[in-house]
Image 1 (tube, rainbow, N blue to C red):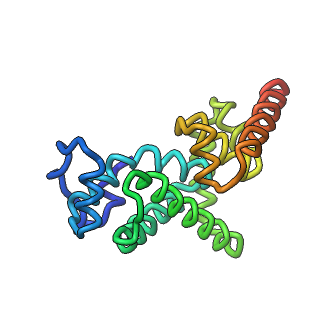
Image 2: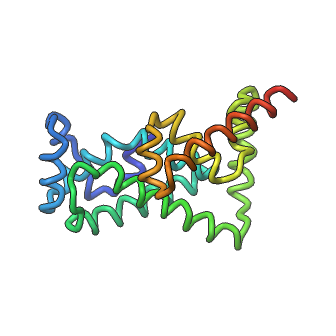
Length: 186
């Protein structure tokens, strides 16, 4: 994914790539440092993309969700209470933005989205596992993407989605069973 197309021009920079302590970057970002904020976004871009991809299928929608997330996070970062939860905090903003896009899209069907979905199918036609995961219900698909593709623990998923750990385990178990059944049929 090309980060330069998602990160607003005024926020792009390479200056803080060398800072190792994420907390110090968060502190700088909270104090209004655009370059530190951008560096944090770039560090989390891959995992955020995986989350968005687990919820949305359209690249256009994913890009929209990213843009909205970056703007909201930049506006609200001064209110971040605990710096160590930056990744969880921004992931929650992204999930909310993805859900807003899903609600908005239920009202409309865009021709571009249909074309993108067709390209997606062509591109991944040989990847039965991806198709099986995409066929799951929203809650199972998101939990599966977070656990297997974003390497989040059950505790992290529980906190992020604000559900019980047992619910996360149950969703993972159900998704594995459904994926197994789908793959066995194919």
